[in-house]
Length: 380
Ligand code: BTN
Image 1 (cartoon, protein in one colour):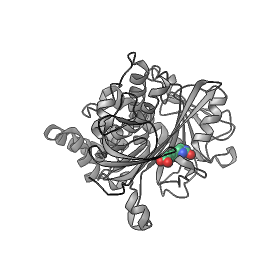
Image 2: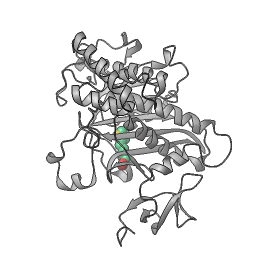
Image 3: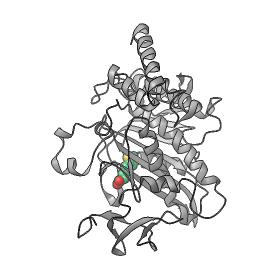
Image 4: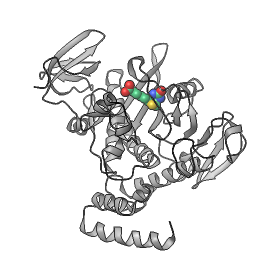
């Protein structure tokens, strides 16, 4: 976009911001001018209250670095973007360069790995020094599964907060051995390595924090998301994202958690099979704003860093500070629910979450794990 057009858009957006709530103005600006969503964060550096000035500036830089990362590589087969996300081997890395080469993308240091991954170091910037989640980000065009790649990083004692991101997965995994279809251009697929210090019976909050971080990040784009215990994120009653937390133990000690996040970003519902359309949705169907996965990723990192830190720093046993926000976003509260677990099926009225993040039924019964399935008698 030319400088003049950018200036005009900026003036109009600022005028709108004076009159309207900031997020509305942002959505208006995005819709009217069909701006790339990374502009959202540029406009929002001051007025979008959710991330605050520092968060907006940080997320904006990360989003620019990610889009710069993809731009360095050859054209994408699927996305139709002017430039695509990178190649997974050095030979298919387009203009990226040779393994071991050092780059700087939007002010962030990067190194090309032997396997063609681009290793970003946001934590080495002055303002990123205190951050854990996203202090290092490893970007690939294609991986079998970001969770599998992250498990290898656990084995080599990689740092907590390290993120592995792929444009496409050939073997994306869901819960209960399901496949997570992960074509390029349709979703966001990433994993985070965490070494949480929360007690083992509070680990459910790690997944719920990640879900809340997504809901907060999506709110910046005008989407209102619900959290379906234990690890789904929904919009309008349909699944929008799934979380796969894998705990890695060394002897009896929790060594790390690999937390995988898959978000449906850009779908054309008419082109989907009906059974998928009925059960699942994508962010592009939940907001009129242009959804840029790099912006969503960057905002998620910022929110997740805050939430995981709060969780880790909690000293007293009991529900963490984020519990009330999770509960306010929880779907199925007050409804008759049915939970299928390895112990069988239980039913009851969903009344909230326990201090450990377990599902509470009928105001007292706790369900520690399982999957919410449609109740035999429908909603109550
Ligand atoms: C589910 O709802 O079943 C969880 C889906 C988790 C999918 C994500 S995509 C990124 C990460 N890598 C994987 O192989 N799975 C997770």
